[in-house]
Length: 144
Image (cartoon, rainbow, N blue to C red; front, side, top):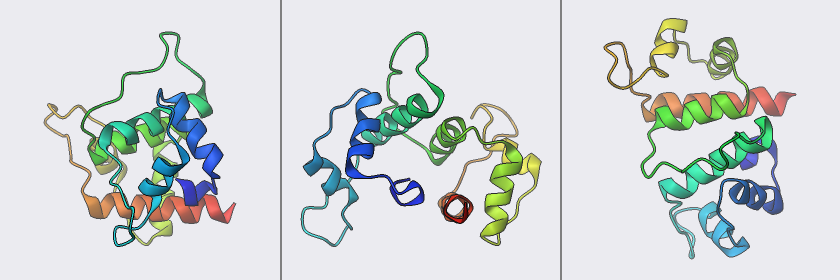
């Protein structure tokens, strides 16, 4: 998200704060480092959930009941749902993003990603699909 929208450190930290965590610049830099770099720290799911919740609050406004409680474990499906909400994306937008990356799925396959995991037509969002969505998102937004 940082690269796609060219967020500064301050903008990133502000989104964490909106999500209920006051991160330090050192924490942010450690999370943003490459795995092979010294000082790299893996961003835990709960922190990523806080960032995504902050992104939703920044773009869509707060809910009446305050800051949502972050998920302890994130799946690609949950991340994708949060991005869809934060960026006000429709199915056609996501399909365009995938097409920009040379990847295509049907509208029905896409809707299966947003179903309840207990639903018979639920589909897990695998890493390859998530990478293609994020790469397409980059092309979609950086082009504008």
